[in-house]
Length: 355
Ligand SMILES: Nc1ncnc2c1ncn2[C@@H]1O[C@H](COP(=O)(O)OP(=O)(O)OP(=O)(O)O)[C@@H](O)[C@H]1O
Ligand SMILES: [Mg+2]
Image 1 (spheres, rainbow, N blue to C red):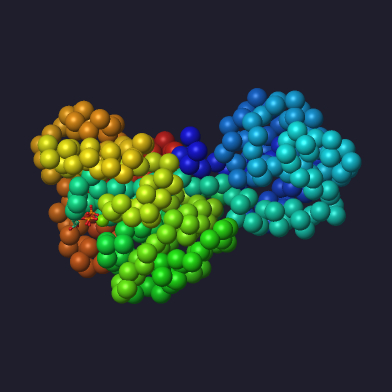
Image 2 (cartoon, rainbow, N blue to C red; image 1 turned 90 degrees about the vertical axis):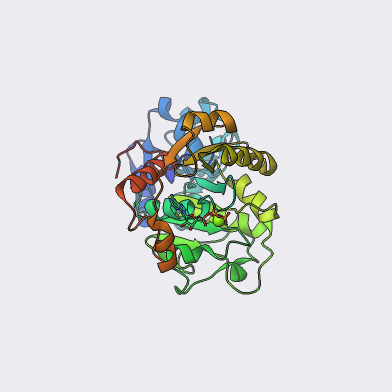
C-alpha cells in the first residue's frame, strides 16, 4: 500500500558498464540510497516504491517489454539519445544523455522528489485525554533514534491540533529555536529540505503550533509540509487532534496508517467507535491503553470493530516527564519503550528486533 513502506530512494536498472558507473557516482554524490537491478523478475516492487527510477540504455528494451504500471520519476540514461528516445514514450520517461546531461542527472537526484517517501502515521485519541499526543511524540522519538541505511534518518512530528497547546512542549522543545506553524502556514507546492529551519530534539524535527494567536491551519500548507518531510525523514508522525477542522481531516487523509488510542473499557471503546465514524477513519488500527479499563484487547477490537496493533502499558511517570519537558520515551520503563519500539518497527516495515 502506498505510504506504508519506505522503498529505496533510487532504483537503478543498469548492467555493469560506463552508464551504470556514471549513474552510481551521481547517486553517491547526493548520498542517496540505491538499488541496482538487472534481474527484471524482481522489478515490480522497487518500481512501485522507489522515489526515482533510472533505466540505462542497455536495459531499456527489456524494461519496456515488462509492461509495468505507469509511474512518474522515470529517466532513461545513456550515450545515444536517439536510441533512448524510442523507449521514452512507453515508459513516460525523460531522456538524460551522457556525458552532456551529467549536471542534469545530478539536479534530478538533488531534488527532494527523487527520494523515497517515508510512511505517514496519524495518532488519534479515541476519546479526549487518552494519551494520543504523548504516543505520537514517543513514536517520533523512538523512530528518531534510528537512522535509515541510506543515511536519511530521523523522524518528523507534526502538530495539527489547534487546541493542543503546542506539541513542542511534550518534547521539551518549546525553547528550541526554529519555525512553527505561523511561519509555515503559507507553504504550498513542492518545498525543499526543511530540517535546517525546524526545531530538532532527539532526532525529531518538530512542526508545532505556537502559543499566542491561534492559526487557522488550512489543508494545503499541511499537505505541502508533510510531503516535504516525507522526503527527508524515515517516518512522519501527525497529531491531528480530535476536532473537525480542515487540518485534522487532511492530516488523517494523508496518513497511510491511522492509529486510534482507545481506553480498555466499555466507554473508551464506545467513544473510539464514534470517533472513527465521525472522522471517517477507514484505516483505523487500535492502540489499547491499559490502565483505562479491564477489557482484553480482543474484546476492545470486537467492540470497536478494528484490529489492535499493540497494547500500551500504563506509564505513570509520563505526566511528570511532560511537566519537566522530557521526551516521553527517554525515562520510560522498559515495557513502555518495548511497546513503542514494536509499533515503530511495524510502521517503518521492519522485522521486530531490528535496532
Ligand atoms: N501510557 C500512559 N500511561 C500513563 N499516563 C499517560 C500515558 N500516556 C499519556 N499519559 C498521560 O495522560 C495525559 C493525557 O495525555 P495526552 O495529552 O497525550 O492525551 P491526548 O489524547 O493527546 O489528549 P487530548 O484529547 O487533550 O489531545 C497526560 O497527562 C499524559 O502524561
Ligand atoms: Mg492531544
